[in-house]
Length: 240
Image 1 (tube, rainbow, N blue to C red):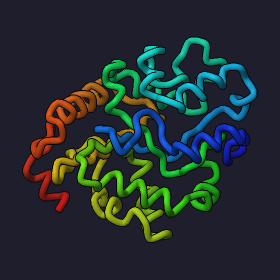
Image 2 (cartoon, helix red, strand yellow; image 1 turned 30 degrees about the vertical axis):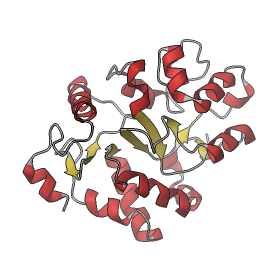
Image 3 (cartoon, helix red, strand yellow; image 1 turned 180 degrees about the vertical axis):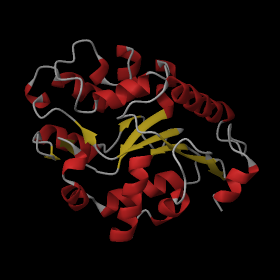
Image 4 (cartoon, rainbow, N blue to C red; image 1 turned 90 degrees about the vertical axis):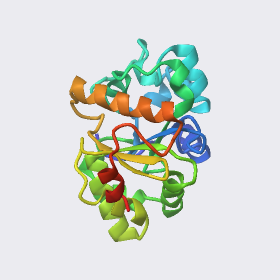
């Protein structure tokens, strides 16, 4: 399938009003960063689309009501589970956070629009679709005074480096991530933690997911205190 903006006007309007999933990122404790929100091209023409609309209207209420954080994981999901973001959310779900954790989590993407197809198949289009105002807002979320646990992945790190060089935005985040390795130390400053992890879109070991869950739980439990589970003094110095 050719990569591009999702053809559904309704889905695009949803993202225009709320360019995130789950908790409002201004209020969340955990920001999960992604490249783009990817869907089946046919999803808006199917009756299942009502679940997508329900989810985007209130991700916290959806998780509590349906028992899963994303509609892709519902038993009645009618499309190919090998594509369209299903693996991404399936891997996240393996950490077994519960509906009571819903207020902590927000999923935010570099692109402000929903997409179809494989991002990597047309990176030139991906870069043309980037919106400077959205990216500035994203960096504000990450480095705002309210501490957050920010999870990126190795693919995203490379994207952010190219975006900062081409568009003169996400500069601070690019500097912070420079030289980091996936699965390496969590960086921390002023209570905000940034973790370079592995992409949920690929195969991930249970050991990695268990360790990541512990880091996130430790951060949430500490309520963004100055000491974050898994961060040493050396890690903090790397963030200066």
